[in-house]
Image (cartoon, rainbow, N blue to C red; front, top):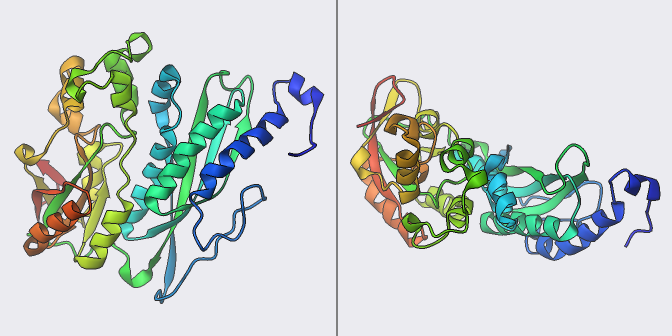
Amino acid sequence: MSKSFSESYRAAGVDVTAGYRAVDLMKRHVSRTCTPEVLDTIGGFGGMLMPDLTGIAKPVLVSGTDGVGTKLKIAFLMDKHDTVGIDCVAMCVNDVICCGAKPLFFLDYIAVGKNVPEKVADIVKGVAEGCVQSGSALIGGETAEMPGFYPVDEYDLAGFSVGLVDKEKILDNKSVKEGDAVLALPSSGVHSNGFSLVRKVFDIENADLNAPFAESGGRSLGETLLTPTRIYVKPVLELIEKTAVKGISHITGGGFYENIPRGLPDGLCAKIERKAINVLPVFEMIAKKGGIDERDMFNTFNMGVGMTVTVPGDQANGAARLLRDLGQDAYIIGEVTKGEDGVVIC
């Protein structure tokens, strides 16, 4: 434990000893994420990792950064903080794999109104779990105590991922053509987008978050909304190794209409069959309770599809079977056609 201590700073609302205590508590979680490439342990000024470049002729680094957004408000109200870290990692690594890169390491940033070491350790526990699920090393981070800037019971959480891909294997979507199939990888729930609308629909600050939520198999409304974002890294990377994957879209903010076109070149459109989509009950409830039309729902939420993968039409069934073998209940939702609309749901 560091001997650093400032009575004056503590009087201003910042307890540096709480920060040291938080680091001690989080070390056991961070250690779960260590890979052979990690060169140092938590606590230094910079995290170090020496990547294995075996078989990579032209290494390209790929980065992604994101936060959890106002989903954190649910965590505050539930006083449950050990899953939002998974969301933070997922939002970054799921982006990184869209170009075929393997996530190498992750760093987080936690800003708190008051540093409660046990709460911070819970947050990092979730971050570490997300890193384990994605095969990433948590090689560093920052916890900033900011009294007067954040309420004492609230915090913000963000992070970034760095991945690696051989230049010759980058998925740039240029090979996508008419007749290719679009596969859906199911989401686990709302993931981490659209929560400003979710909070309004359910009047979250006044709702009973512990009440059973019938549409979610008896779980409470709060538990349903806090369900962590699914991490697709390992099954998708294996699919890339065994199938001619042409394009990937992570369905985040902007839903189908913003994200699916990002996996397509100009002049092509994804024709999505509405009846083929397995919409999760939570989205049906949001639409009904909020009086939200279907166009807006598909332009805001993932609707039960966390990621889409474009493959040759004649390989679609095989790709779906492989993904199911890897724990992803994948299925075909459409095909690539000519068009300038980007995506059409019909």
